[in-house]
Picture (cartoon, rainbow, N blue to C red):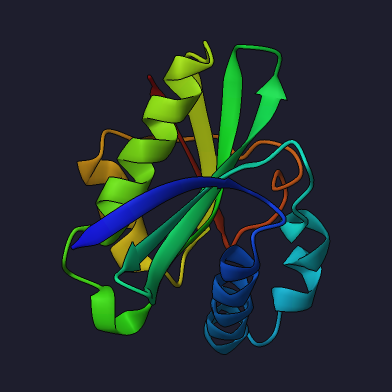
Length: 150
């Protein structure tokens, strides 16, 4: 049975998953990934969801407040390859959106990349629409920014 755990940015399982995420991003974007490292920080303001099936890690995601009680940014979304196609990422995203709504936020933004067509499709199916790139992604042509009202 899949469980979705609300946790913090200090969670060791979350850190294991984002190490795998970063490895995959380096494979997808070998020539530019170093430019994104400064944007992939995680601090105490982040709210984190970790998905597990029993003791097996399945995926993660988080959000950070962008504007006080208005906008959050969805970040660090990742599902272990063996769990892909099973709705884990969609559920992590829903759980993050619900958490943001519970805290009074009304809009979610995110950034993904042109080499992640499956992520783009999943976000579109979840109601996200493309928007002009927001800071710090404004002049990065490999970035795709999206938004959804919660």
